[in-house]
Length: 185
Length: 252
View 1 (tube, each protein chain N blue to C red):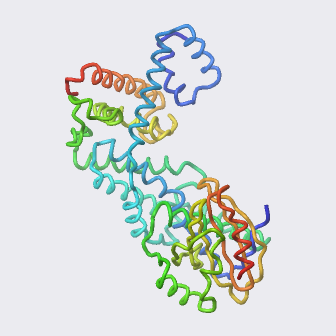
View 2 (tube, rainbow over the protein chains, first blue to last red):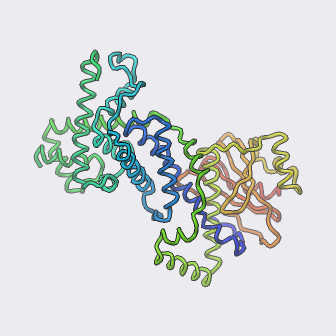
View 3 (tube, rainbow over the protein chains, first blue to last red):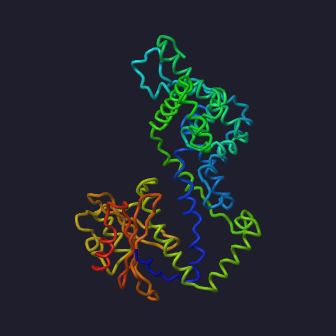
């Protein structure tokens, strides 16, 4: 491979080379969809409310981008910020971290009308908030157990035990839904 | 290991985070325990179902990205300095001074790579993530764009259109603080971006180069002619960026 072309820069251009905005756009913004997915499913938020939370997260990340260590996991750093904001919101509004059954939730009494994925999403909303957190972070977003422990400020052992219980709970809910389709969850 | 012990470590095993000795112990137990093996398989299926259910929805984050980009105010230098800590700030300053002292060339090479990576990033952000709206499309608007930015070369678009490609749109962008025209051409292998600007009188000629942005799967090929400099960006392995760059330099 050939060497890069030599582009001469004038001294006044040197500071521009450290383009923090471009670095932020490259490192952080591609994770916006993952943050949005987490924000929507963790508390059953509507998309507009979830977007507000993600916006707040990304702007805080931008203001504090100097604290982010280049080369480390930016996605984990962003999720830590989002989780902190979410906890603050829950404390501020005393909102119970439970998922209301949204109006778009499928009617499980008519299983022929719902897809399997919608059934799984509906079952997921029946898990406790602690179980939803670890399942989403570990299974959907692919974070390591250690990273999840740091985000949620709990020991790794607690993460693994919550994961065990969460999987068992989700299996039970799904089995119940499939074995007695006439009953709603 | 007994069943209870295996149950405790299965999350770590499923995450691929078990040490080798633990993997051996778990698999020895599973080979002789149908109950635990069935539990593990059920856990795997639950994981796969949840992933499929969550990733089925294609979430469009472009509106929140646009809102964030619009509100990203520059962070003052003093705040950045405190954010990284004064010691680290001092270390970075010293490094910059040493770099300048020992070889401007090394530093410039990094900046060259920075511009190539910025071109790949701009291609990705413009065409994939942000889908900006300030493009001039073919016809009068693109002709006006070329007339105002490249008055000496009104046939620019025609000259640099790659063989087999058709011109799609053009906009002005900034690569690490320097303005370039970003032209997009549609080719059978996908969209190709050509970033181009007129060279300054104090600039020397360059040696073309190719850089790969592995994270985005993009290839960037630089080019230069006596009057122009720029880069061609396309999907790595599909778009012959180096050939297009060489052809662009030749016709200009």
